[in-house]
Image (cartoon, rainbow, N blue to C red; front, side, top):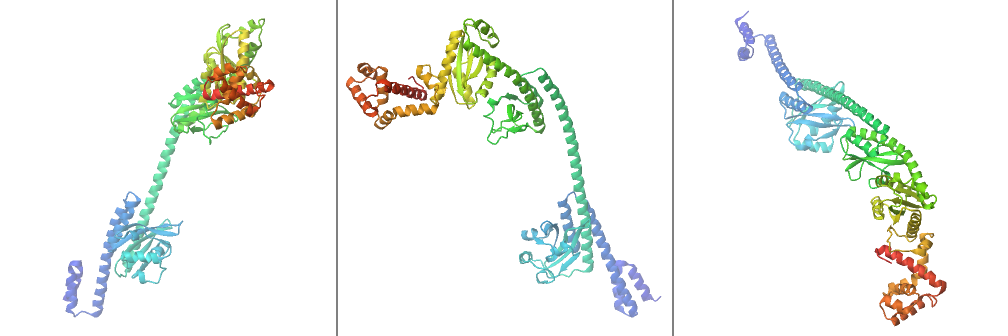
Amino acid sequence: MSDRLRDLVLAFAGGADGASQVDLILEAGGLDDDLVQAVSHLRQEGRRARRQREAARILVDAATLITGARDMDETLELICRRTRLLLDSDMAYVSLNDLDQGQTYIRTTDGVLTSAYRNLRMPLGTGILGQAAGGATVSQTGDYLKDPSFPHIPSVDDVVREEGVVSILAATLRVRGRRIGALLVADRRQRTYTPDEVDLLTQTAGLSAVALSRNEEMRDLQAALEDLTAAREEIESQNLLLGRLGRLDQELFSVLREEASPAELAEVIGGAIDTEVKALFPADLPAHRTANDPMVSEHPCQDSPNGMSTLVRAFAGHRELGALEAHGSLDRDQRFLFERGATALTALLLAQERGWATQMQQQHRLVKDLENSSTETWRSVAGRLAPHRLQEGGTVRVLAVRTDQLQDTRMGLRELLARRGGISSIRNEVLRVISPDLTGQELHELLVSRDRSAAVCEREALLMPEDIRVSLQGVQRTVRAMAALNITGVADPRWDLGLTGLAVAQLPPATVDRLVHRALEPLLGYDRQHGTELTHTAWSFLECDGRVSEAAERLHIHPNTLRQRVGRIGTLLGEDWHQGSRRTDLHLALRLHRVQSASRNGGAL
């Protein structure tokens, strides 16, 4: 081997440090041409091997970092940063596909300057990005805006122009055979990407796809673990609920077996759900119900309109028996136990209804017997009073009520009468009550609190045959007359209707109104128009049996003034207005008018 050939071999053996020595030997000449070509080819292969080793090292480093990323955002940011460094480009970015929209959108970037480019979306198959994301394994361009080899979108071109992008290289991202997007580098200068650079981007895209696939699997695994944890917690929660339900069922069974009250049932349920619970009867419910509340034969919990309580209703078919009201809003488990209580309340109330129905029938017969009793039969009737806290010969209050939904009103009174004593009965559309101390005002306020309009009358009486009979007939006649006159509230003791009340009690309200209007409208109209008191004058004149001096004194006017008014009344009604049957009709109409006016003004007749 010649000395020069030996020197060349030693220079090659020196690797990078001997590169300059190889150049000197080649420049000196004297070597065979084939040898020189072989040396050049060998040097190129050496440089390519060094670049591949460097790229492999960078890829390994990138793989270590990317696969160690904790979430999707961190993974994508590392992919973009490492890809940009690896290919020495101005920017790198990852796009992900939105298959429902048929688009791909830029998800993460590194080196991008404008927000429009960072938020770019474009149809699959358009532009370099759309082509790579849509299926072309690798796409590139050295001058994007002038390249006619792919479809352009003017709005996208404007964004590319604003960013200053000229060259783009893109590789498809695939996860388990699915195209999920693309990995791209771009430069703000014309650049032709070499096969080695294309290969590097392709390898990086494959690595990135593996990392994204791993990330997706980790998300799926995490979701599965969360579902498993939630299922385990749900099972534990259900076990606890079943335990609470078992204890509640035992307590509810005891309540039903002992025939306890709804209030005691509510206390048991309140302890089970750890909040205050009250039992409500149908008469208590209108204030809680809204127009859209369903009336169904189930027991759904419903929040009250004010949001301060939760209701669950007890039904028998489509008939509402009552309800339970819990303070505040309830969680899922509380609602489940609360609805369980409605089933027990239904059973309890149905059992009580059967007992109450018997009691109501007994009370109805007792009131009827009191009303019809004689001295001979009184002793047997009086012997049935004690269970109702009524004492023979004692002072009681006899009340009559005329209102809508009399049966509901009577049922609403049953608890009150059970506590205070007393009996009730319905006859001829009037509810009659005999109680030791229940007043008409109390009864009226109770009805008003439940949105009920009613006519109420009361009398104090001795619990003896004649007094009770007269009182029952009197209060019943009064409330029927009040209904005919469209009067509600508590009857004023000063409204002594006498035979007038007896007559009116048999008439419907429309007939009474027509009677008053037909008889008095000429006087009432004249008084409204002229500010006079001819109606009151006519009443006083008839009350004094036509005696001028007595009527004038009663009205505090001069007798001549009275005569002038009587003449004016005669002009309006006819000269015979205070004579014969006309006098009777007019006197009755005036009395009815005064009762109606007194009821509105709260005064005496």
